[in-house]
Every structure is written in C-alpha cells, then in structure tokens.
Image (cartoon, rainbow, N blue to C red; front, top):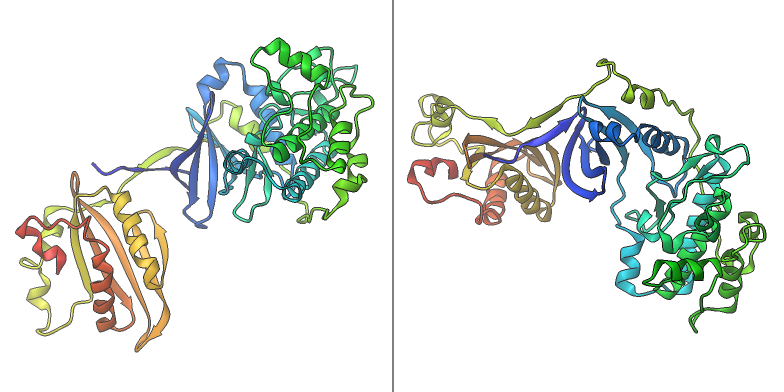
Length: 437
C-alpha cells in the first residue's frame, strides 16, 4: 500500500526532523495556507505518567510570551486523546552546532554577529521574566537567511517560579555550559547563569572547542567553578577581555547584559533587533490542552490517494475509453496518463522535481498538483493539473491534464517532462498501454 499521509487539524505531517526523550518533531504543511511549520508531538499518557504537565505548560506558556526575531515562535497548541501537538515556526537552516562542526571555528566577526543575536534574544527573554537555563549551540538554530533562532525552552523557568529568596533551585542544563552557581546547588539567579552560558557559546564559536572539558565529571566541575581555561592564540584582546568578564565564577561580579551592550568589542557592527508590532497573548489553548474536555480535541487521520474502481480504471484506458464513443476523430488529447509501482509520495516528489526546471510553478495539495508556466504561450500561460490515483496496492495511475494554454504546447511540454519520469513509469504490461497515451 502507498504511504498514507497523516493529517492533524489543518496540518499535513511530513518527515521527522528531531527526536528526544519525550517528544518528536515533524515537518508540517498547513493545507489551507501552504505554509511550512514544525510540530512538536508528545505522548499525552507519557506526559502524565512522568508528571510533566506543569513543565510542559511552562514551556508552551514561555514560548507564547516571547515574540522576538531571534526566538522560535509558537503559533498553536492542539491535543488529541493520545497526543499533544505544539505548532512551531519552521527553521530550515540547521543547528549552529552543525556550522561549528563543519567549519571547525568561525571567524571573529562572524562569531560576533551570532553573539549579537544571542544576547538580543536572551536580554528580551529576561525582560519578560523568562530564563532559558539550557543555552548551548545545539539549541541555537539558523533560518534560511542565516539568522539565529533560540529554541527549546523545555528547561526554562518563569519568574513566578522563584522561591522567596528570589533564586532558582533546579540544577539543569548541559554540564559544559552551566554556571558554577548552578553546580553548587545553593540557588542561583537565572539571569546571570544564562549570561555564563552565552560566554561559553562565544568561546566555542571562536575556538571550535569547549573552554571546560574533562572526561571526569568532578574534574569538569572543578574547572568550571574555578573558571580554569586558556584562550587560543587567535583570540583578539577585546574578545579575551569580554569573555573573562562573562566567565567570572562569582555571579555577583559577573558582567551584566547592559554592560555587555556597552563593551567596545561587542559594539562593533552591532544592530538592535527589529520588532514586529506586539499582539496580546492568549494562553487559553494551553489550559484547554490539559483538561479532560473533548470539545477542543483534534483527530489524526491518514490520507492516501483516491482509490479508483474497475469501471473508472477501464474508462481511463485507451482501449476501453468511453470517450471513444463520444469523441471527435482527430481531436488532439488534452491529457496524459501513466502507471507506476512507486509509492504515491515518491511520485509526487518526482513530478515536482521534473516540472520546476521546465519553468513551472508547483502547488501541491494532498495527491493533487497544479502546474503553472511562467511564460506566456500562443494561448496564454500553460497550466496543468495532475493527480495520483490508487488502482491497487502498489499500483498508481498518474493523470496529467491541460487546464489552460495551447494543447500542442502541452504535448511538447509532456514529451520533455516524461523523460524525467522514466524511472517510475511502469512499462511492462501492455494492458496498461493506455496509461501512457
């Protein structure tokens, strides 16, 4: 059988782009707007069993409160009887960590640009009472323009969670990036601990390796608490001075973000963030996800190509076509068909892959596709519609028909287009010769 696509609400789920202990992230397309998103999917029972409800509500609420160009946006929260879906901004440029792994280290000017964006994002989060607490290159994504986006607020904390002493008391984060006061477990300020992590990230961007790294965990903690590290020879004096003030083991004397913004090394090429107009944030959907009401539940449904019965199949073939009873002799056909054993999703991808180099814009909806030429022919722009039908398990029929434009131009297009389909067209059975007419 062809691989069926899963639909949740208005979103068609695609490939998995991330996976963790409690969540899976999938690429998704909004079938109404054709926009691309990422959907974080969690198992509701697992969330309840591990008593993660409050943590998850915190994550969602945090991300909905944050509206910043360098922070991943959250658009919508949904739930089915068994799963929770968090609709996020899709960022397609990969992790900043991958860039470091590929390049080894970044040039100082490039590292500074990313550091500008990181500090802008963290400063904004702190101004909203939000502390990330797990800042590291793996949680810093890049969009298609190379702009930095901070992600994963699963370990963040809202200011309301502070104890009476005004400090946080949950030791969390990745050991190499956490501040000394977090390791000491005597309470810490989320603002200053995030700043420490930013300093470690800046060091990694410019050096290509961690300032604190030991196989033995106790030795690692000792180095972090003593801020024992060495600068590479290629670090400028300005970068060294700033990193020294950030990686101060005493959080009371550690540099603050306002002071970072005034640092001479930091100010070089600095551009303040550009904000969109803020809108009121509604957290009602966050509560609705976790109550027992069925009113707001969505359903997962599998979608596959339209099935074709025997009568429809015969009517589409050349030898048995009912059009022969009513059509005019000599009429140039306005549609083409072929059969394929390939999975429906592969067929759709192949159609798109073959059409785009020929100058056609592609609009996909489920297992239908609209192709519109970007040039004007003898009878206007050539436009076509194609659809994949399921004839039988592992057998599909693909129909391509002209919607507008010149019919002869359509046939000329199909001759070139079909050459790109050779590896998926089924040619072995004469019975289906009509599919290729």
